[in-house]
Image 1 (tube, rainbow, N blue to C red):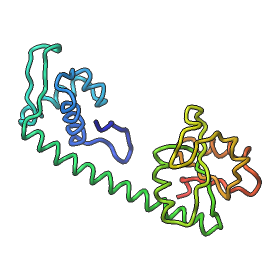
Image 2 (image 1 turned 90 degrees about the vertical axis):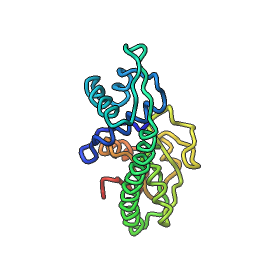
Image 3 (image 1 turned 45 degrees about the vertical axis):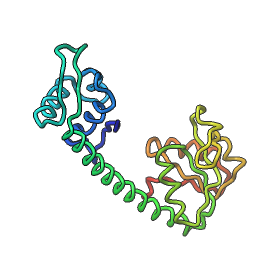
Image 4 (image 1 turned 120 degrees about the vertical axis):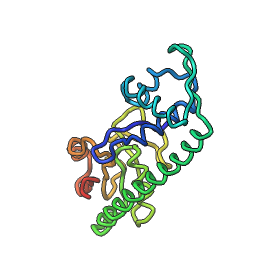
Length: 207
């Protein structure tokens, strides 16, 4: 399913909620209303309203008389609606991804103009995936990936073994790019204690 999210700028719309619920129903006809509420981050009463709307629009059928026997099924109209709206949602998501990528490329080129050629990424995250894609459009090379989460250490991230922050001492890059939007100042202070003199600490917040 499409995971719900909480955002100041991209708040889930009614259409998003409908799409999310239809995907949940598609994956399991015997899913309970409680589980629908839990996975869609909606109250049970709101799910009940959406289910009624979806049924009224002939996108789903509902059978059964109790929570144990209730079943939801996509109609042919519902399947077509789901397919069409999933494509539209995907297209919008790609446009947002491309916009973020363009801004990161612009930022990386600013770093490039400062003479930064080799960087280490701090944070093996989804954001780091976008940064890695953006770097392909510059002359900057990623020479390492570090993360403070011990559970990630030793795993491979885009061809690099994820190492602990202490590894900065042996890698010695031109710059360290914090690829996390959260706690950037705290991360910056921690890196400053570990990095060699002259290594620049860079933030995506510098956009």
